[in-house]
Structure formats: C-alpha cells, structure tokens
Image (cartoon, protein in one colour):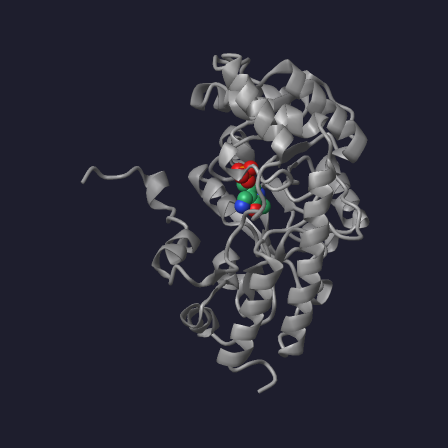
Length: 374
Ligand code: PMP
C-alpha cells in the first residue's frame, strides 16, 4: 500500500463509528451525536424550490450574500456580536470551519489548550496541523464547566489558541458567563486565539449562552445548522472572525471546497428567516428527556450532573465493562475515555432518542447491569 503521509499516520479513525457498526442493530442507540428529529417542512420546501429554480451553480466562496446578511443579524440578536457579511464564511458544517481554523493558524511549536474531555475532532484537527495539545481538565466537582482559573495556569509563550465548546459535547456542561469573559480577557492580554464552537448554543435549558466574541477580537466563532435545525446530513455551518483572520481562513476554504452546497445554503437561509417554533418544540422535548435520563441514572446510583445543555449526560461509571455489557444487553453508549483521559470513569449517553426508548434503555440497564449502589 502507498505509505500515508506522517500527518495521516498520527491520527486514527473514530472508534465511536466503528462501535456502531459492530453492535446489535436492534439495540437502543444512546451513542448518537445528532438530533432524532427531521428537518422542518419550511426548510425542506426552500431546498426543493432552490433545485427547481436551477439554483445549482457555484456561489461566492464565502457563501450567498443574503445568507451572510442573515447570519450577521443572528449574531447581533442572539450573541450581541456586531459583525459584517464580509467577516462571515459559510462552511461545510462546523467540522470544516474547525479544520480551517487549525490549518490556517496552527503549526509545529504551537500549543492549543483543549478542554478534557472534549469532542474528538478537536484533537485530530490539531494533530493534523502539527500542533501540541495542552489539556485542561473539566472537573465533575465543577459540573464539568471549564474554569478560567484552570485555563490561566496553562498559558505560556507558546499558547496559540484555545478551543471552547459550550454547551459541551460530551458532558452537556454550559460554561458560566464570568469564565467565558475572563478567558476572552486572557486572549486579549496574552494574544491567543479562541476557537469557540457554539454548535449547541440553542440546545440549552434554563441558562443563557454567552459568546466570547462579545468581549474579545481574537475569536473565531463556529456555528451551524446540524443541531439546531436537525440538518446534519446537509453539511452546512458558518464562522465569524475579524477581517484579518477571515482572509487567512478563506484561503483554506477556497482551495479546499470552493463554496458550500447551494441547496443547503438555501435551506439555511430559510432556517434563519422562517418560524422558530420547531426549534422550540425540539428543545422542550430534549429537556423532558434530560430530566428523565438524569433522574433514572441517579435512581440507579450513578452520580450524574444535571447537564444544562446539548443532548448528552456524562454519568460517573467506573465499571470498565459497562459499555460492553450495556451493548450486549441492548443499549449503546460511548466510553468517556474516548473524549480524553479525564473522561475515564464516565460514560457518554446521548438522549437524542425518543422518550420511550430512553425509558426502555434505562430499564434494560437497571435489570442487566450491576449498578453503583452495589
Ligand atoms: N462540534 C461539536 C461539539 C459537535 O458535537 C459536532 C457534531 N457532532 C460538530 C462540531 C460538527 O458539526 P457539523 O455537523 O456542523 O459539522
């Protein structure tokens, strides 16, 4: 076989996907990282219409201007960020935006502060760019919320960037306003970049989301339509950054994918312009499920934080065979260690599955797995 490049050899394919492939197809999947809802009808209609209108040609590299204008309005309304369509790039999901950040700004010798545990792609993107990871633990005693004081300890002259993800995958933690603001201040004082992945921004319960870009100019804000509008397969996201940062990011985007898909861009435009009641319904449903899964896990004796956002819980489960035994019994979960060393002794459970299935899954666990009370 052709020898892969060193950068490819440093990373592995996702173990999570592999696990889904080998487990029982009838098992209840609490391993999944995408909403179980369908794309709202108004968005589907807009996409169908765009094809019928032959809206299938290249768009500007940064994306349709109408869409970028709408994203600017969204940033102002939801995040208190004043920006301009020229500072927005529409991307192929937040995934592409993340990759662009790493490729445009990280190189050998650069340190990137990374919450531990965190979303798997962060580590891979940093490795692909030859950067060095400086982990910072998100502690259960702090409900897994990243603390500015813990971040401050890790800053040195090689610190190039930090990745923030609130609400968090895999813990569901929502960072406190004061920590986000303090980290934003640190980024200005110490001249490092904040890559703020806000993809779960809207999936948040009784809590407010804050964007560091409100307080610092050294921020690239990533967001997308996958989670809020259940548009995962349509691969559409966006980023906001100041003019200088945006120009460098555009180089990676332009020569990699040219522009995001026309159909998805039209869907995204409708998602932002249209009614938001489907989103509200989805969040209300997620909240009901969160309450159920936390209650049931706690009843079984698994210590579980009442996660304030995203659609994951991260109970403390020290039994090393739990994930395997749960899968055999018919419930798929993901070992916390997959998200970083500090995830060891925890299991990620996604509640992007129906209320009924979550109920059933909890009963299966209760009946089949020796629990924390024993
Ligand atoms: N960031 C986080 C934290 C995620 O969980 C995911 C999806 N699992 C992404 C980014 C990627 O989202 P997209 O579909 O927009 O590429």
